[in-house]
Length: 324
Image (cartoon, rainbow, N blue to C red):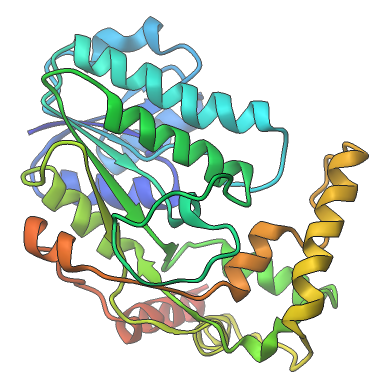
């Protein structure tokens, strides 16, 4: 099939292109710079020069594509609302409209569990769980509005939303960010890291995308996880161990951490500081908001099963660290 990928040089996009090419698909991918174009060629994709700010200028490249897979999004969680609204919500709307005009058959939007995150535990829920009035990050808010754009889009194009949890694997950057906080003496568990969370290996997300390219109902949302909830402390202790890092035992109680995050974020926004606060509400929820999702829908409708276990993923990361 003919596939068009945005975010092809990112952590997820690059792994996706490698599999698409390996399975014989023809891949075009959006390139914002010469270096991005070179990386895409190396991966086996044909670069299309442009950005999500000027979709109309390169939209003709969408003609003849069977599937558009929209992975691109800012890989950051602090900044002005205008940035997230433009680069996530408005960009998705423009891409949807132009893909439909070019008669693309299927549009797959890679969203995020952050669309649901505020202060309510997300345990034992499925895709019918309602959005919060206001997610606790501009990233989550913009992704929520983008999901609504996809669900409300009217055309002959089949539109599917995949909603992965935290994506991990060889090359991920979150553990490096935690490592930096540990080295700077700024890291502490919250409630000893006992919070249960879900994550999803990058190759499991790719598996879900590959399935969604062929099956899945129009305007439907699907959670994607490793189907293996675990405590935040257990998982990240093992993840950091692949980098030779031992986290400290220091911990903050929930009763202090949550209001501290709200206060810090309020001060930073009030002063319009560009640097992120020491603890944001998004970071608090990532560490301390319980999350465990039902996967009945993606298993039944897409035939999804995780292809990489936690042990397999950690072994790959350890082997990569040893090579480096």
